[in-house]
Image (cartoon, chains in turn purple, yellow):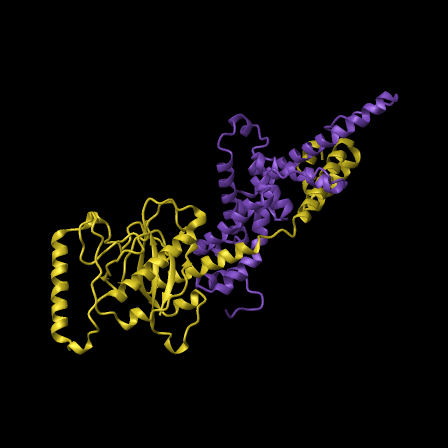
Length: 217
Length: 299
């Protein structure tokens, strides 16, 4: 391979499709982390993430010629798109008997086995909070979870996430807004349990709890 | 700005995303005057901080090295398949070939007229060979290998399919010329109906390799063993992983093909620079679906 110092993804892809193994290895090393983490954060399972990563690059090997750089989307977005399809396929396989009502309620469509349990011995507050947040993300419906993973955890712009998911920028934006509200609610719910205990103690000691109302001024 | 308008903005502010400066100023002013919206913004900022912590928590996660190793092996096989396709040889690791072009193996396609025709031609060729070649060139007479007596299949003249597990049985040697560039030297099928769990795929490969080795041994029992057959050196089978590997009970065929010598490079094998333009023989293990499962090179 005779490439510039930092060849672009498209350049590497071109060499790869011409049979250059070194270009394929370089492209893999550059992009595998993001694809693996996306699958891991979507599924909560290292095994699924490993399988998905492998499938993504096998698909690139076989059908990489379908990627059209002139359309304006990046190869990274293309790879995330393939990864997303594989992850959703895993979800379909893993939860064939999930009740429809549960699916439509927008709550916890994720398979029980895919949720990573926090370490019960872990006593660090931050680790505990991060663990709770991870579970809250994994419990989001897939189409909300994927925008959280891409926009928040991978710090993609709305446009990049839209390219990866194959939807409009406005859709990404509204889903992210809704997903953040759901996460905030879940986190508040968790915090409320602790707060209720503290408030009960205060009430018992003669204190008062202040309630606020939203203003629409 | 009222609370409703604020709700469409506060997430972008909390995420420190790029927004219009005027909208940001209005939102800040509203939050100062409206405690519930200020609480909402505060929650959103806390959530953003938590999500960033979660992101950094998994920042170092990467696929294990075995994934790269698997993919590189698959890439080599894929590239070799493409090279074979371009050179017009058999489709080695290439796409879905439901009806393999190298399978005149099924008993259904057998026809007695063709059999007798082929047998006649073979006999004529043998007679011509005996008459034209000086007797001094023949080696010492040896016994011809025979087929198992209980074989139910019609007796072919150019194809014999002995089960691999009957390794001690004698077998016939097969020569099946094909059209175009592809040259099929030997064809075998491993036993059908024997479950082959995923973990035993290498066993299948070994069986196939053993079958081929046994076939070579059969050649040495043939009346006129060639120097080429006795001096063949083969590489290990290289699994063509993107073809899916073996599944339970699958049969397979071992086929001799010729590839451009450059195919060696694609499998990481050394290539003599002076013989780049030549061709190299290879044995390809073909599954029932016509897809190549593994390849080994022959010298």
